[in-house]
Image 1 (cartoon, rainbow, N blue to C red):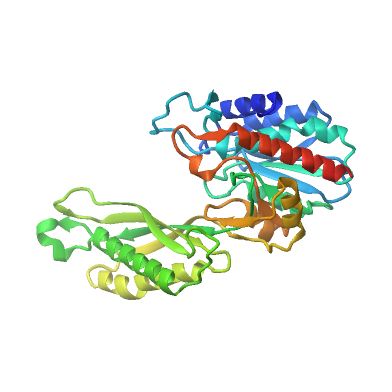
Image 2 (image 1 turned 90 degrees about the vertical axis):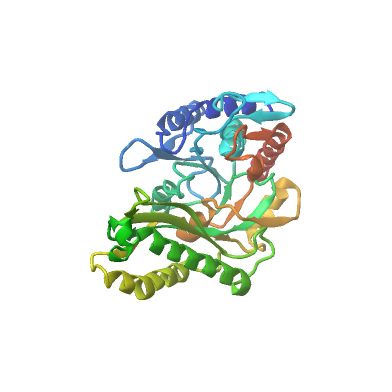
Length: 386
């Protein structure tokens, strides 16, 4: 059963409405105050507006690299979801804690913060670093500013544990993501004179079908990694919008597509294939009607995949904390690839809860997962005090 301290902190953190579109400063200031009460100074790294911030703190020796526990403060929206209870008030029922962020990933943050007093009292020989980011759910945006700061420090962490929900299993890899918006500009006219116009929806549809062909080719000919539930790089179109009325040839259409790539595959050549198809096959035909027509590609967001060698020290170390020798890979993304590639910090993912319970109405985490996370923290403190 979860301890009183962890349980209370989960309630407190969930009560902060930190949907990515909103500020996370109230939660960050709460955490900074909680750390200060135990003699731990936290550094804030704000966004350009000053309305959001990352938090970074070190418990123990300041002059040597340690183990970084990292998580994000933001959660996905609840609007339009049919919740059975207030999503920002934790409900305990049938051995579960319900609430937005209980699985993804405020429970991990709560357990880590609940153990700060024990960390401070343990006479750590190796420090424990804490990192809390903003805007992970919208493209791993905030942590990039934090990594810029970490890269400038005289001492940065020796390894990183991302506490995303993995059922407290050790994860050594996940896919990367590249999201792109395509804007098609056509030429309006009355639909009875359709050949005199350039139908933006039609050309967008041709490009969407081309992307679908690329996806099929990847599935058949691309690299495969059976450690993933979906073992190939995928391409999918998620939203599309265009046109104003049925009797008007549409001038504008836009759609968003994403690539979820295996860590060893670069998504850029796939995006370039789509650009080339638009440039060489579609635009010349559009220009025969009007030179003002065209197709533009706009990067939206992206992050690299995580690919940690199972033989690395961080993997064996975290396996010893969870008491299991298995490791795996996940299809969803985390900030882990950025810590690994942008900061050179060996990284694994391991945290309480399951991704299957996240992002949906009545999100929940099992209390026995919180207990496992607490045991993990206690073992971490013990190991770093030896």
